Length: 106
Image (tube, rainbow, N blue to C red; front, side, top):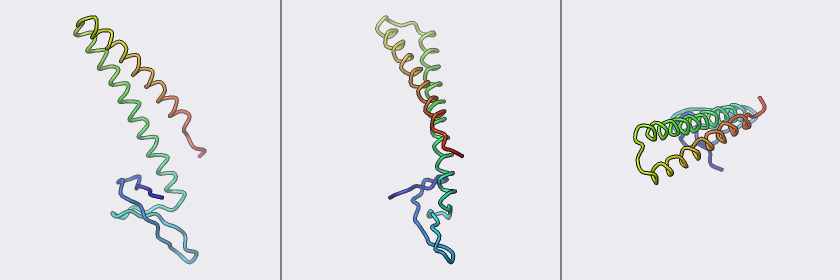
């Protein structure tokens, strides 16, 4: 199993620590996580990445719409742009639904 550090994306390795040899996940630069804190950090990382994708899709749709309005263009370009705007809007809505449905029990 390979895991990356939620802070720096470095490779995590497992160290045993304490009298009961608890597992601690450590990366090359010194970020350290106990099991539960790693899960929480990964959940937060996932939410940040998903929101980044949602924002990018919204911005892409806005950019297509602005371009569409500023340069009317030929009918083929208009049809293609309109189709892409619909696709991006649909993807944006799907991404928001994924975000809303992906919250782990806290």
